Image (cartoon, rainbow, N blue to C red):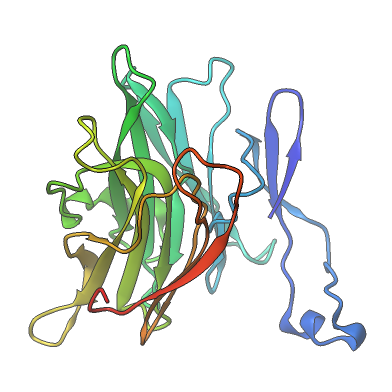
Length: 275
């Protein structure tokens, strides 16, 4: 993806790379053809957030962003789809989620995954202001297409994520990873609490599965209660890879909360049993 910053907005554009472009002499990657403008009026994003803002399907590019507004509120989140091959006759579509609650303060750009059956699964965290406090309390939202490949059919499936104490409030920094077969997913996030019972920025992981008790495969990911996998940390921009043997998490800073003199990056492996 390419984001070009202007005074008032950003342009979200993408260019596709055929597999042959990766195997040319010298291993250089070349962009073939002109970029496609996916949306011309979005909010800027921090460059350090290397999340799944663009996915490819058989016929579409799927993208996510936050719409630009002069007042910066209310937040309006976008998930769109555009033809993978211009001129193919495939329609472009956009799903919009407007957050009119005035206490909404910060949000994550929708993070997307696509399962082999064509369904798009979208995750985001919404943070709410506390009166008289600089702290924010966040909730996790989960959406899934009811019609595979059609983002306009995204429906709220947040009830599939258990919200139970002590891990019932969160920070916006989060990421997800899905296994190649689309059966299991890991959602990694920082837990917090208003009363301090959960130390600030405690990293937890939610395991989700689409496998049913009778051996079939459901459409939703159904999540277990979250598991703490490391000690509280200050900064957190993780990358998550879900494999048959467990989940690999890399990219978070390992120094203690409030200490910025020593920055370390850890690679953590967590089995599907939480160990």
